[in-house]
Length: 74
Image (cartoon, rainbow, N blue to C red; front, side, top):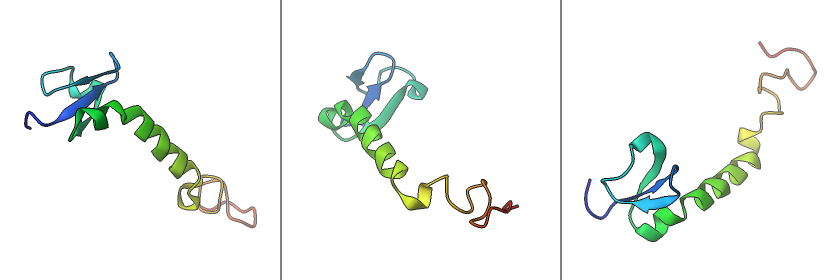
């Protein structure tokens, strides 16, 4: 770790350096304070991308909900 790493604290909603809250309570590390400040936006963007990615769609065949013909897939 270096002085050029930053984290976004999920408890305080602030950007922190190395000496901040425990790692379980923050996102990062990021290369810049600006990048860390965008952490929640980045999470939302990734979640939306995954929600719309057919490879991550839980409603299709092989999802544990049954095969396309309606039979269980186990």
